[in-house]
Image 1: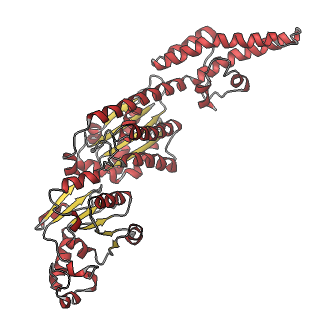
Image 2: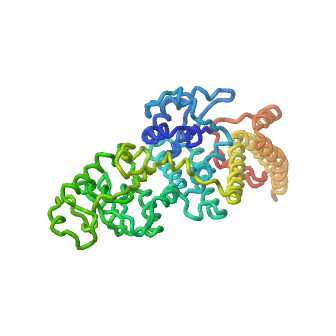
Image 3: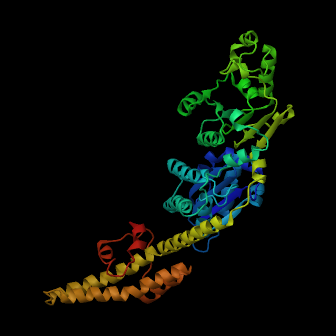
Length: 475
């Protein structure tokens, strides 16, 4: 049984999402080990979403509630949140609806910015992490692989995501009213991961040329060399932050990397050195007197920015809200960005949802047919065991030319055809148990857990009219 526990910008506060995201890496193993019914867990955590996909091994008629509650307790224990608070917040998706939900998430249909491009990669990396941790299962693996395929199809066949939509670009669109000339804007980029690359590309698309990068983890030099920009060291970051017109933060650090103290330190340094926002060729003597830690490239124009916009794209927050206590500083964080997310473009979104819904139905039908596989194998084995016995008797009675054997194999295929068709029909209607009960009543056949195809059953797959696809799961 597949289950999804979901908290997102639609049902959870930003503070809760921040706590969940900060501890997401530890959640999967804790969930997996929390209850015996939990066979696997894959956790998806983004700046506006935390989801746990569970594969439960629950017997017929057994309630999944205890396992789900234990999973919620596990999440709460690593995030420092009360289980009751999480139970009141988490959305609950189960059965075939899980596929539709994940396909929509991976395609960007559930994002703050509909069609945003980063989510597909985040979903893919969630599966990779679960594989590394050993917390995935075959069913979860298939689900996530299919989600990646559907996200690519949605992108290729609809207008969703065609314009490189992302939270980064939305943030810069919201900043347009504060920036008079992007080409003359000095930017400090804090972070060197995938989000930093997307941020730099979005800034350059707007004509920004003066970008410096700082990395709390010390990766700025490599990132700067790869992207043709200047790296900022730990010793010069205060001055760089104070002189930037725009600061964009997008690190995975679990602490504030920009705060009031940092900006005040940078401003104080300029005041102590007598720096001024002067044109090139200004007071060279004053510049030379500045401490080495404050002498940056293009020093003649380095000075505290009169107005600063700080864009915080990090989760957990990269920026302490106290920066707004300084004169001229404005903060644009994910919570604010989320409020201003644009409405969906209904045409493209409708087409994308049609693809997602169709793919989810097909995935659900395939899973339901796979649920019947042990019973299908048991029936086929029963029929082909009888067939082999009759063929052997025919050979001992003189069937030298094989005509009797051919007729018997044909008859077995014809007899199996209708039960196989009905198995698929009942599976798609969610009535698998009716088919299992039927073959038990008529043939005395019961599925065996972990049944595997033997040679006779495998040989007969084509003759019986296509049950082989359901049986491949048992190999």
